Image 1 (cartoon, rainbow, N blue to C red):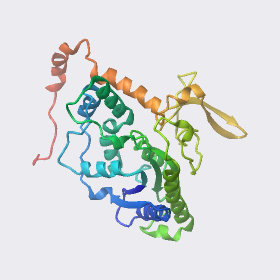
Image 2: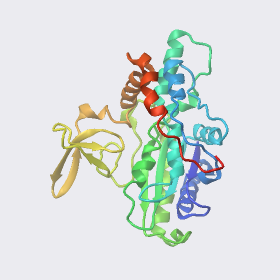
Image 3: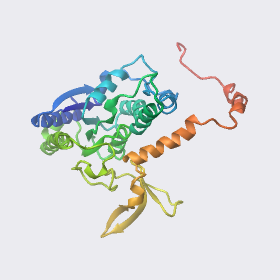
Image 4: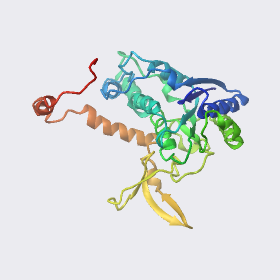
Length: 329
């Protein structure tokens, strides 16, 4: 088993130290470990061209990104190689670093497990031999641990956005660690509790990999054990819930996995309650991802009945103003 440590902060940052501690724990159970620092890579932002979606859903091909002049192929290969992931990030403005968001956008639809399964199925059923098929490693049952480190309690979006960055690849997050009040770089080494949690987390990722030999992507009954704080959402363990009072049946929605439910106060504690019927719509379920694939198929691939009128309608905006840019651009 191979476990990748991915750190998004400065060299020898507190988050990097905890990722390394977790990797040490994984090594104790025989894991092969590797560390990548996202800041060392040049990864360009997604342009929203939809080429990956068209490739997967329209052409039954690989969904390969058309941006080639950066380091995305490097980190993509590392993620495809790994069986488990330890993801660590410092907290900036209540969330993880912007570099992780750039990577998440690039991984997004192009590496969505449901989209890739649809592409594979279509190739097999239609006997397609042209183009490049999807990478079979996409269908590994991977597990991950998240580690976020901040200086105060301005942390509300850190773990939710880190979890969201792994949704498309269908990694099962088995632990979430939030460490606050850690200011000076490296000072987390004085926090014995944080170090112990990180070591335990790495061992747990390795343990889950050792125990899941016959598990499949759609096997919800054999989901690996989650050992972090339970959170509010019973499916993804997020604490971030959006209130939608206009929806009387589903006034609350998990901001990470999208499952809808209701909020109730039981024994002075807020509970997010969901039905068995609604679980299948969650983004952490393969069924929920297939629903999203159908939605995008309708939006991105089916022609708009007014498509012929579009060029004329866009002229008004195309010729309105020019972009302000630096003189050397």
